Length: 297
Image (cartoon, rainbow, N blue to C red; front, side, top):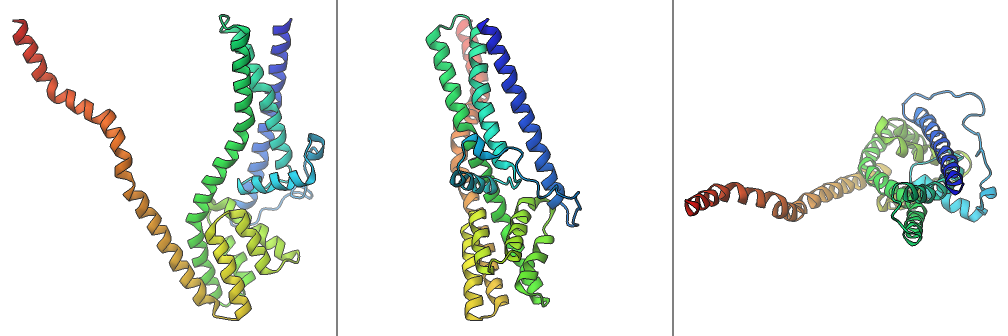
């Protein structure tokens, strides 16, 4: 009876996790269709402004916790209004499914396990299920940070071209965002959010600072401070952006050279553990075999 109850709970948790994952994938596909092409895609009325399908407050999130988690999800590339709810439900499903699955697997597949061993396995899986979503978000943020850092100089170059063509700063930001390719979907989405904030009444400097916080890049913070000082002092915007873009390209080349210089020390351990013994065996094996043959004869 206990095993049947555990099986039912595992099946229910798995079904909830699968349904949550399918909904999350569907929402990400809608965002990619919206921002993944240069042309604007029209959606049915209300699809873009639809709110979360479950209020996060019902899941134990107060407004402050919702804002913090919402900011973390945006940094990880999840811009949907229901991202907080989806993340919370996924975490609850994982916390329910993984320990129960481990307990059921230990009871069925490993009958030699005692009660203490099964409890230790369940607690270990519970800790893994608790920290796994946060670890996934941190990994996504690191991946996007690298991608943003590679895209930012190209964005600055397009911004300089647009300003030289006679566009204002706001129009140049929007035009440069539209010219980004398919591989820069998250970066484009952040720029579109900045444009929406500016249309809602935020100043250019404040919107740029908010963009820098979402991107989590020192270069973006320096860019926001540069534009703010340029606007306040009335200096040449094109010259300032050109110098800043050249500096960012030099930094990107310096980072690439640093990674290339760090490659030989990293290869020392694999070479010593895997390649050198094989070469040594291939060189010495014939001589050792001949000596053994002579000694045996």
